[in-house]
Length: 175
Image 1 (cartoon, rainbow, N blue to C red):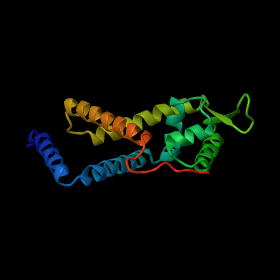
Image 2 (cartoon, one colour; image 1 turned 180 degrees about the horizontal axis):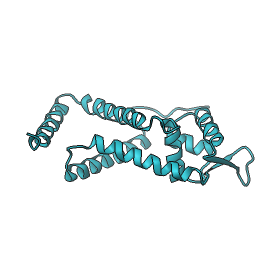
Image 3 (cartoon, rainbow, N blue to C red; image 1 turned 135 degrees about the vertical axis):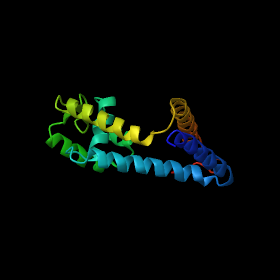
Image 4 (cartoon, rainbow, N blue to C red; image 1 turned 180 degrees about the vertical axis):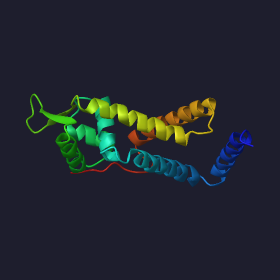
């Protein structure tokens, strides 16, 4: 009976795909729900780690963009600068992040991870791996690869679309 489970899941995915054609908003809701549930499950797995999901996210993005300024990191995370400032304050108090003055602009702070952050990054990778394993249980390696390829195409399409003017809308004139 366990062998038939993956097949049932694949059929279910086909049913979702077919219903997407009939109801175009299904994709939007499904992506939103999956992202929300991934965040929720990550938070459950990370309980007791001493950091919130937002703090984990800041550490992870900073590790990928070491030396970025606070406003640049806020933009990457799609959060308000004041929100990021509060998170960075906490991470700095924990000794995981340091703010360094910018070479030429004293209003700008450059963010760097401290050596104490490295074990935390290892921990977050393990938590992320655990969460992804739970989410992808029963999904074949081929389907996983196809899913990633499809999501990368969606992201590229939407990135291009967001950079292009919207048809039928005039550009705002300020002056």
